[in-house]
Length: 90
Ligand SMILES: [Zn+2]
Ligand SMILES: [Zn+2]
Image 1: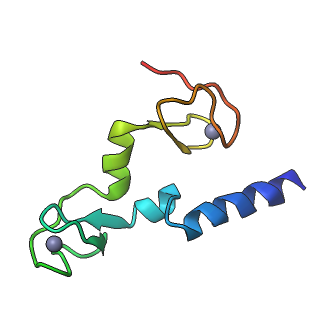
Image 2: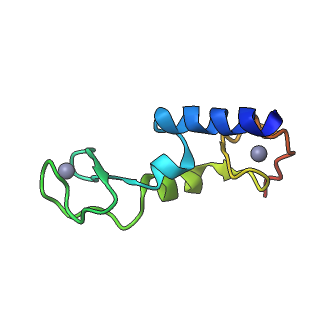
């Protein structure tokens, strides 16, 4: 039963665009801030070249990724809110 619950929760996060899989598919234009699909090289709004990094890459630079479940955790947490694993900060 636990496994089913875990899967549902991850799907819920993905639906809102906050899950790591969703973030890996988004690139944000540095010129106008438009979110574009990671497969396109140029901004769909202003036509400027998109950065090589996805939203996920940019995000994990400023946050921490849980070693247990790969959830992205804000620096104020000491334990992962998803799996309860203690977060080790450098
Ligand atoms: Zn743009
Ligand atoms: Zn975790």
